[in-house]
Length: 380
Image (cartoon, rainbow, N blue to C red; front, side, top):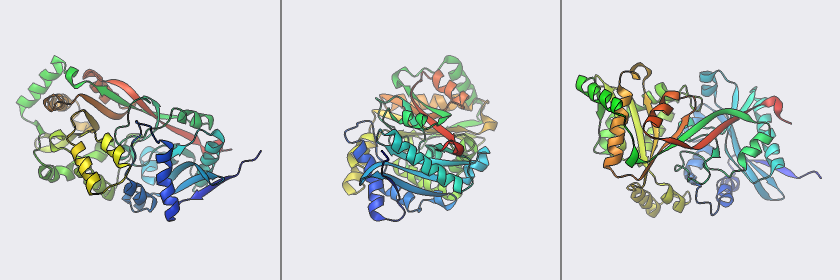
């Protein structure tokens, strides 16, 4: 029996925008691991107010049947990504769906048609703004709460929906768990860090307040493109996007948790970390207001868990001892501030050096997100 699927393009329709935001809240009601995006951030993306859409094009869709929403998704054409990686992808994101293979197939075929109309060869994702928004479908670690909205959370049936729709692996992103009390800095690493400090060319800057961070933030944002822009889950961001990311981070950062690596006083590396505010974000349910902002600010003082979501050292300085110095400072700060647990968020399996570094610290992989791809010709 033929089903009555309807694809609705969200566009500027207020009711459809509200439904796009509300659908996952219903889908994950009572799921303690899921953390919502801020409603206003999603609205800005749908209305193309975010600087991402100053260089990319895209559309947002709802899949409905008999008046009931079964799935949502967006699809984009990001020329900056394709140029950097030599691909011809359309990318999908905000994929959420009930456990219904027919419905998922119908939606993915619609996204493939959108991509084909624009001369693209593959549908890949989930991905939107790379490391700035988190990527992939969770395939391992379902019992663990998402790292705020820095990574997606989904039900265990999601990989099946994609694989049955003939998607295959593109790249895996590993999140690694650390016990701060057991962080193991090997003697050889500490020795390297001490020697590097004595030479005086490498330094790790510490900050007392956000004003001090702001003074060096512009140098940090350009280094982001140099260190992460060529990763499969990232792309070189525009000046506007980098400024947006900088402004967003300035709201939630704890200056004591920001580490900047310099060489002869030139910024060459960074380590960005954040206290876990997932609990307050869940309670706020995507809303912002005076009381909800106060809840987030109180959450920023939480010392239960720390997330590391942004580690980079300029290639030119990677094997001169800077890595050892940065990780040594990281370990000291985490222990000094009394965090109970720590997590490195979404390290690409292709980034072998960083994976080894975190393993050296005592980290182990406990969450895996997978980015998928499917040739447009696989649509049926």
